Length: 329
Ligand code: NAD
Image: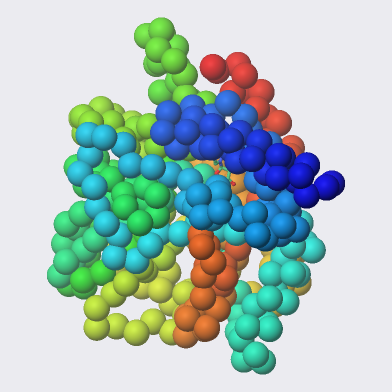
């Protein structure tokens, strides 16, 4: 492809992706599958890697996709809420491993694997053990204050078992059963259906009336400590154990693994059948370096940390979702 052709295609991809971002993040109504979206994004990433001087700060490859809706108070995050780089096969995971190893220069480390829950990222602030504020990720820097809505989630502790001051990150989600129930009710009421549980969860949490949110039976898994006063947590897995001890719901399918080959084996063990049996949707596996003291050395790109990556499941599921979307919109 000539430089001229690449420039034109880059422009085209950016405009298509921005349109899909709006449908997904603002309207909560995607019009293509995540698999197709990821392919467009990968094509843009590859073209920008070939022509780095064409990268602009507003390119979708450089920005977190969300936005902040009117009607909610805006909240500036103390630490940015980033996205995750994607891996689509074992070779992408091996590349990730090579990058990590070269950056940590010989220091020993492990990986933690967790299910990638397909919901909405939220930040939860606790002061002296009391839940004081919760926000959406928004554009990563500024989110929406959805405290009243989050308080309706029964799995979210309003008081912790220790009086800690901390920021916790998690994924609010809609169990599959609730998603089906809500869509049945909407169908009977002649209302538009939700495309998938992720969009239903996002749409619910951005309702202005917490009473409606309360009827949606959302749940939440927490997966990270954003910041904590007076404690040092040397590994991510210890952080997850602490969250569990404090009263949070933490996904039990997490493992600490010694190397990338063990990670690949874990990822491949999540076959369609095993996924289908889960009572909630997952769209991949998240892989993180366990030793947190290495994080500053690994650093972040414009939109994702270099110490973590999301392995995205292949098309099989995407096609099902796409069919659902076509049926539902
Ligand atoms: P992401 O899906 O690339 O990954 C980051 C998010 O993963 C985090 O913000 C967090 O919410 C979540 N997560 C779940 N479990 C986690 C765990 N255990 N540890 C850490 N994080 C965990 O996030 P993104 O930037 O919101 O979205 C990009 C993706 O959204 C795309 O790859 C695409 O699949 C989808 N998308 C689809 C469309 C569409 O039109 N179909 C449009 C935009 C985005």
